[in-house]
Length: 419
Image 1 (spheres, rainbow, N blue to C red):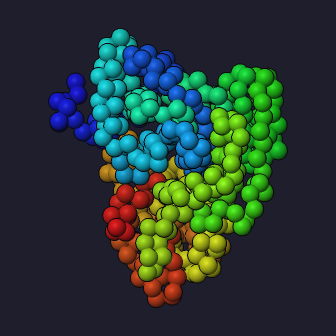
Image 2 (cartoon, one colour):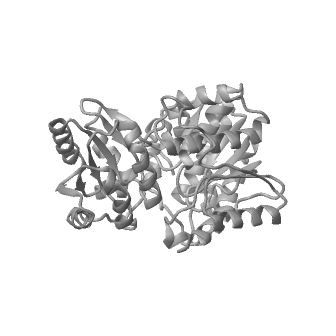
Image 3 (spheres, rainbow, N blue to C red):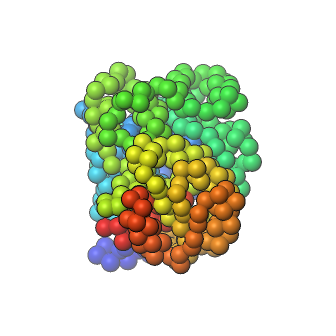
């Protein structure tokens, strides 16, 4: 039973729950939603799925809709420091409102769990239900809902969406979603509701054909976006070519709700956004950037955008990578854009606290060996904070910049030293 209201710690409670149930499916989520009165039915929703770009696109959709006079929000995952970061309304983290909604969802989960045999509401299911409740309590008219893992069996697949956005497809979470891009795309496209709209970002020819076929089967309108949809000169102040592509996808998705989109309003709204962990500037003298790229496709997009942000300064990277990620593929993409790298172990206590018990990370010495195979100069540090201080020292010596990347789980411990 959750403690008294003044004692309830939403983060601690969520961290105590099992991340994934032994039985995949939507039944638990539907029961929990019903117990809460189906808050997700009180606002219009746009479902955002894909391998990379989901959080950025979701934030941009909400910002564009807000700029056109609607109260808008989004539900994101994962977070960097606090669970309440996952729900944003009118550009602001929802803080105490989210915490109160977690408590209400926890109470509803107790009722649901009592009727389940050998199962319980999972961490992501409860967090998702709390996010829906937060958005409803905040009075949003429209929300972008980022899928957590895949789509078909994801807890977010309980929304009556008017549109589905496929941002991109790459190889990630293959242990759950499949070993090929087509298998992964199939899991994500399963959320597409009949008679709605499918927005397709830049994807391979094979994935595009599957997306078009799925839309045709379900009588859905299709809106396609290419990487060239936004010119390099647009969106001043928004770093990275991949973010310009994300903007084009978000603009098309927002149009599914708005009808017509003012390019000026959309650009101004997105230019004003701070999107944490996406080429985010977190320090100066030397310049320190944070990016959560954690698969080869994300690393490639990051590498291609770095020169635009750093002005071709030499870059020292601080890198930590989860064991289940394709570290060789990531380093192959990044090596050519880096001057050197400092590899560190992701803190296991953070992984456990954030719902990844039993998760492990690549050993820094292994990563050094992989990096040197690409010709990249590399060394190790015992923890993210030490690695960041060493990277700053090197960057000051060579007039360069620092990049922190490789995993979401790198940033809370390392980020304490960037404040």
